[in-house]
Length: 121
Image (cartoon, rainbow, N blue to C red; front, side):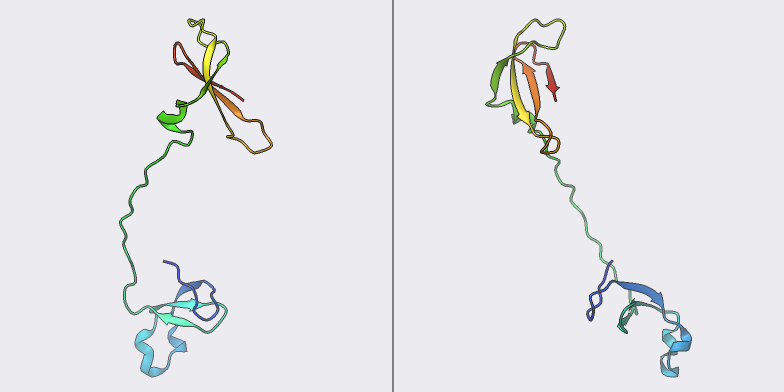
């Protein structure tokens, strides 16, 4: 748990309260933990448990390059299939910018005959 100082907005640290800094009527707070600001005199005594449990839902992972729908409505081009057993000269293609903007786009191909996929940078 992170807390910030309400006075100066700096991060609070957890430190024990030294017994020699307490008046006699507050000696029961000796060695009790506190939130303490390192830049101003703010402190908050931790006299009870402070915690919160939240159940986290796992997020569905989306396919970055489009998944099953990535080959819908794409164009065809003349290119030799990379499979040795396939002599097809036509493939679907799509271009995606997967590297930095000053690099060329990556072209993905899918053979119209054997459905093998490959890419060229």
